Image (tube, rainbow, N blue to C red; front, side, top):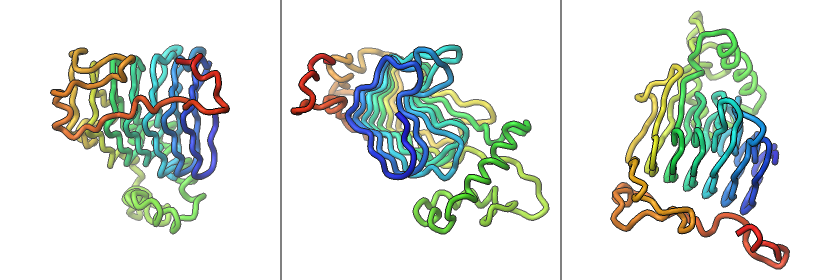
Length: 274
């Protein structure tokens, strides 16, 4: 599935047994919610169940209440939510990731919110880097040339009003897309403004590398454990026990029973997929 443009909604689908990504998107203000996605990337690697990348102007997208599980991946594997090549400004809230390689991936981007998600048996739950700081030509050209061109292609005043976080790029690109300080060399763009908050992880948690440092990310109030007794099974929606420390951290119940296709007059075969 490919989304392009502004304001599309992808909701309550079952997407499975697919060779590549389940949902690819470009653009702004899309809502991807309540989808059940599994056994994707069966013939490809370095892909995501939900994927976008390489444009700072792709802002305002929301990925909420999806169940992503048992994904495939050739070579380096696959990701659950793949924010590739410095793409920024996505909200990832209330999703369940089960047996996904790199479940939530921030590839050098900025101002993502990763909040109230449940990660079970992923490897790891969250992986992040600072590739926008890499001085090698391929990455420097991506950030200094291609990403700059993409920003210049959108109406700046309109986008800066709609997505105020874009103004934080002025320190690196300048308000008009030129150097931030005249006469200085471009030194890349760091992964600032990312918030990873109130998530639950059972298994491997956070891996930060490739020019990224843990202190670059706002990581707080997450409950991390290796005790599988701290979460239920898929059959009961991975329900947390009443005495879970996650509740005291502000974790909110995930609407697991609302994920996937809903029965209606046009879906008489729904029971087959349960």
